Every structure is written in structure tokens, then in C-alpha cells.
Image 1 (spheres, helix red, strand yellow):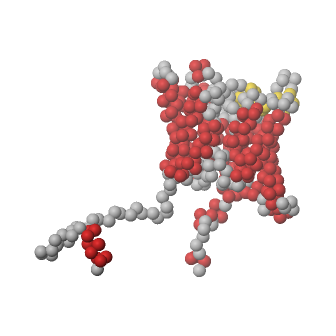
Image 2 (cartoon, rainbow, N blue to C red):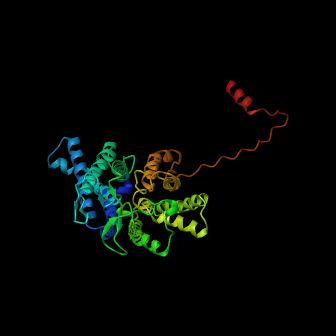
Image 3 (spheres, rainbow, N blue to C red):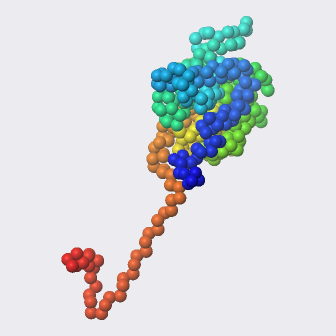
Length: 382
């Protein structure tokens, strides 16, 4: 009889589909980005990561204990922080921020003025982690009910509050392992940006290039994460590919409108737009979030196209050089509207065929043809 039992959630009956295992796969997929960030920007990334994850875990545990009014072992055991979703938020938020910050002047520096230990960055990720978990995730009902991605919302909050204090990360030298301040490719004026030479192209793939966020530094690391999530069937690879492809096409379009000199400059600018900034990282690890993206293939196509369009528009004509975070937040808000008008087809649904019209039956000789309404009226009288 057990084989005849109907489950309300049959997709969750397998052990490999538990929330904890899904989040564990996300952490494994993020590991190459963490490794690349640490390799290029130093130990400060590990410190930021530890503080941010501790803030996310502690904030979720404390919120659950206060809400349940149970501060004992049973309350700790029943907290949702053990599903590892808060750690995924902490890792993504850390990778979306620079390694160093100059906000309150609490940094430990060497004789030359270089930052040895950035307490400002540690305090910033501490505030950001608590903001992401409590205000964006838990107050809206917890995992699966948040209206927007917690990490991207916390990143926008920190950048709006302390944008002048974050130090843009860049590597020391070609294939170097130390960090210093620098200007990103997107941060320079459009007319002063260097062309996509072979050296710059290689740097964007390997990660040895100035970036605003430490997680967006290496295309190889992001690609490994995408490959792992695809093999584990945690995401549909078509969605990030649609986002990147649409961004490339829109970059070509607007570069042509702005008057690119030749085809090489047109193609080079569009390719650099895709490879630089947080577009790739966002498309793989954030835009594929289950609860903040549409539920259908067509809906995700609209979502990806809007995400790419807003990113390119903000980058080219907005005040901020990087528009991926703002674009993702706006599209997260529009996701329920997309699902409302692009409804998924029910499982096993077959469109009903329109019944064929019956031909008029031959009339009896000498009997006049009576319209349908008259026939019904006569039958009612009878």
C-alpha cells in the first residue's frame, strides 16, 4: 500500500533534494570563486567571509529564538539556520563586495600606507549579513518567501551607504597575488576605456584585472561553478546563457548607437561588457535563485532579457558604472508579475479540441425547417 500513497510534494521525497543538500551544492559551486578571490586579493577575503557567514548564521538563529520564545536546546535545534541557506547568502554577499574598505578609519596599515587588516570591511560585512538575513529574508517569511535576493539587496544597501569608502580591488602585477587599489574597466569613461586587447581579454578570463567585487574576478572560476550546478541539476544552464547572450546583443546595439568606430571596436566593447563586472557572477549564482525568478521557460526568457537590458542601460547611461545589482533587484520585484501573466501549463494538460459542428439532418417531406430556438420553445411547451 505504500506504493499507492499520494505525496503533496513528490519532488521532495528523494534524499538528494533536501534544502540542505541543495544549499551544500551551492556552497561547493561557489568554492572556485572563493579560491580565486583569495588567490588574487589575499587573506582579507577569508576574514570577510568568516565574519559575514557568522553574522548571517547568528542573525537567523537569534531571530528564530526570539520569534519562537524558546532559548533552549530545542529552540536552537528547530531553527532554520541549519539548512545552510544563510551561509550561501553570506558567501555570495562577501564575493559581491571589495576586499577592503576605508569607512571609519579603523584599518591596520603598514608604514607605506597599505592596508594590512581592514576592520572597516569586517564591520561592513557584519552589518550587511544581518541586513540580508533579517530584513530581506526572515521578515518576509524565510527561505522561499523573500521578494528579492538577500545578498544583492544587502550589497545595494552597503554600496549606497558606504560607496565612497569601499576600496576597489586590483592585483599587484601580472599573475600577482597581492592587492592594491585601482580603477575598474567599467569605472573609467567610455571614451577612455582601453580596447579589448589580448592581454586584457586574458586578464578578464583568469581574473587578473581590477574589479569592484572579488567574486567577479575570474571567468574560469564562475564557469566551474556553473558546470557543477548543471551536472547536479540544480539550475537550468539556459537561463544564465540567455542573460549573457542578451547582454552581448544589447551591448552591440547601444555601442552602435553611440557611434563605435569600426566592427572591431563594436565587438570588443560588447565582449568586454559581458566579461567585466558582476554580470557573469550574477547570472549564474543570483539570477537563478528559485524564489526570486519566474517559474516557466518563457518567463525566465523575459526575465533574462529584462535583466540584460537594464544592466546595459545602467552601465552606459546611469550614474553607476556597474548596473547588474540594480537590474537584478528590479527584475526580482517584477518576477511575480511575470508569473501572473505567463502561467505554467499544468502537468498532463491537453488542450481540448473544438467539437465539430453537426450537419443538418434531412428534413421529413412536407415538414418546414424550424429554427433551433423555435424547436426548444416547442419542446418546452410540450
